[in-house]
Image 1 (spheres, helix red, strand yellow):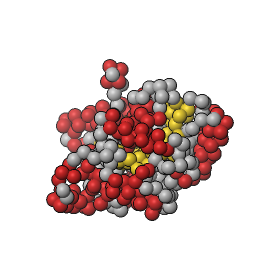
Image 2: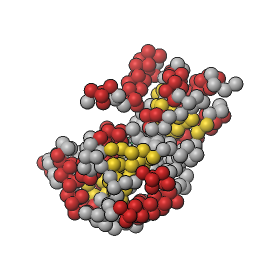
Image 3: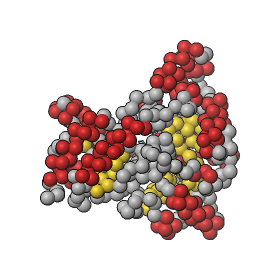
Image 4: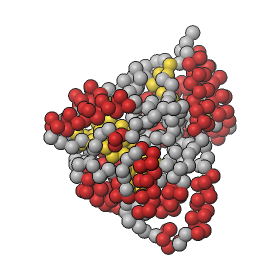
Length: 390
Ligand code: PLP
């Protein structure tokens, strides 16, 4: 832990720094793009559900222990909703309620990994993956970033799969790029995994981390990956889709078709208990079941994205236009992204170096902030740009 404390999350450190700067200069003069904390209030239906559930339901049932996998009726509601939306055939025995996406990933890695097992992921990726895999003595293997369009490099994946590969971990819409992995990418990925499973005589589980599933702009479709590759396990969270990150609620989808389904599902239930979560928060389980069709106001983030993207491009910066999530991944005009992030801080612009996500030479700008913050930050970005562009 001494090492982990020293190298503790850069993102969290910036968030703390932002609070200090705000106290010093006034919050309106600090442009804190460091943390993926939603800036749209949860739908009114969430508050209504909380009040109604607390007032109307049996308090002993509502606040008591339950099955480690969560309330059966809530799991059934989640399964039905997925079936309606994606034409799948899940039931309550395919769903485990989790303490957000973070616990879902920890539960599934506890379930699947033996010490030394490898989890392959594509850079850039959410930096916490390193810790989640290391928690179970697994080894995180990175596929290098494809900076042309940030779709995963499937050829390099194929080269990196060995007998030690237990999981491949994907995240789309992606943190930090905002890129959505295309159907073509998912098809190619599935083909390679099928081929390698046969060739090596092993099971490779594709873990798809989807906290940003509902946050897409325009008519972009996100493929539901269990339909493309049999050994897929989905991790979902309501942190971003219902703006409930502090409440810690999400779920895992463990399809009956995966290899060793019975053992995996049973082990994931036990993992939920023995990792100390015991079960996902009871009130929030009931709330999300009531709010299963509620949506966040995506137009809010879309306006932020458009203004920020157009503004930065006009100033001469380079970035891929995000299709989802609420992050923009900007190329730094100098190779050293940490140096650039430090330069940005002089203008009270807080951005996260891409090296945190396994992709140096970029910074992540989390635009889940007030619209005024975006508008008022652009003159600061203009001053910053003058340090680099003539
Ligand atoms: N995975 C990704 C890609 C994320 O960006 C985050 C949070 O920002 C998480 C997982 C963790 O989400 P949760 O709050 O649901 O645990």
